[in-house]
Amino acid sequence: MNKDRRKFCQNAGIITATTAFSPNIIVSASRIKKKKLGVALVGLGYYSTNLLAPALQLTKNCELKGIVTGSPDKIPKWQKKYKIKEKNIYNYQNFNGIANNPDIDVIYVVLPPSMHAEYTIRAAKAGKHVWCEKPMAPSVKECQSMIKACADNKVKLAIGYRCQHDPNIQSYINVGKQKLFGKVRMISSAAGYFDGRSEHWKQKKIMGGGAMGDMGVYALQGARLATGEEPISVMAQSSTTRPKVYHEVDETMMFQLEFPSGALAACQTSFGIQMNYLHINYERGWLKMKPHSSYTGNKGSMSNGSIINFPIENQQARQMDEDADSIIKNKDLIVPGEEGLKDIHIVEAIYKSAEQNCKVRL
Figure 1 (tube, rainbow, N blue to C red):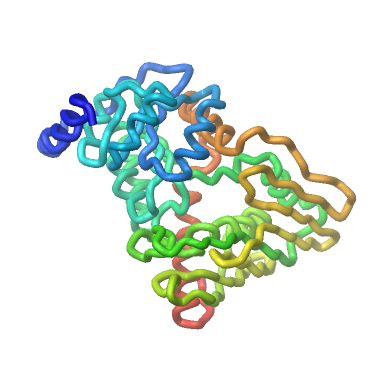
Figure 2: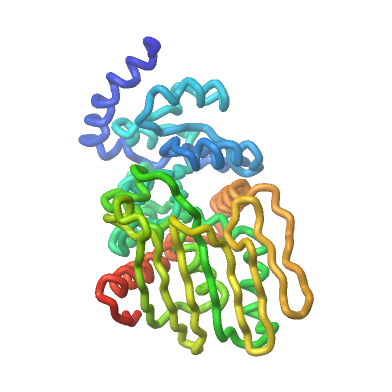
């Protein structure tokens, strides 16, 4: 650790104390309009390191300008690779000081779900727009507090649902809206993979782990987006084949949804089973997506012979570019905080149903 790094770490507590007792310091940074927004990634785990940071090099509306990490040993590598200035590097103690940094316009929260609300609210109070990874938060109450904090501080809040920015996903949404094959009758939707880890946050309840909140939102959104409706009831069953690993959270969740139009959905998600598909049966035809929520591209087919296979260079880059464009032009976001809240409202009902072994009305 060099002299500047030691000074950075030692001063963290001083800066935190200053911002805690000087609320006027935490104000919105300069609102000068920019062609590109500066993004700071909060949390430098796999998703930030392997996907978001490389994707930001492909964007035209935003750029990687800062990082927030509790691991000082990661900093030199990030500085060397992405030319990040010393003044744009923060830790979790001096994070509030980012309010006075005009280089940073957007905070991207890429932490375990249990930390999403805290850092979204802190970012909003610092006057920064917020992008938050999914699941939005472990509870409806936290989601509501995040939405309120961003509204109160006049900043935008987007949830990192990359798939809703994918033209392949947008295609099947439009098929439902246009009633190409009539009304939706039955949906089968699944999202899962085999996770061999045993000590990751995804296996810990206190950190917001569990398959339903993580992969489960893809299966859930498959049904919601296909119908264009919100479910009116859920029935769910949780199971595990590895009780020594999944004794706090769900490894596999199967759930059934009923929609106002009468459409039904059978969905499943897992950290123990590889699955990635969406099958929609309409009154007069069908649509299949396989894969449905892949990083490397989604594709599908329809009963009329049409193929859904729009090329997309990078999902994360497209997501961040479109969210940045919405901020720059003050347009509605494709996936605002309210969309994340809708999912967590249903996720809470799914957990309640699985725990009580009963149908839950929404």
